[in-house]
Image (cartoon, rainbow, N blue to C red; front, side, top):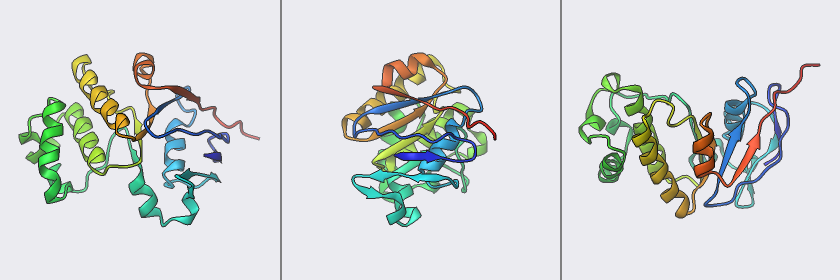
Length: 193
């Protein structure tokens, strides 16, 4: 990433390698979420991002977003259940991931309005991981989880990184950043002129 910034986010240049995690830190309102959205090409800004030598601007936005996937703190859902968001060939893998994340497979079929915030967070992670992105950008993915479920999520993320996925992680949990990240990116709010 080179000179990525916006009216809110001061320009940043950084890189994250396959299999590594970069923790994105900064004060509330500094622009951590905005930075992830800039990288995902969801918000306007300046600068350029690359994936394996190919620039974001050289790819159609949907193609970029499949490979550089942003998962919001409160993920968006457009259908009634988790399974309705998945391809038929993903169902078995979804159930396996759900079991590893202590989420009963039946919850994947349930109406999303019946799931707790923590269940929706784990379900969103399942949906994201099944896309097999090269880079996964997570915004507070465990904020509603207890310690045991945080440990389960971190184990699944470590395994995905061992398989080559890069991770950008916004978290206010310093312990989590220390457990997962090999580096830290500090985001500073852009000063108004």
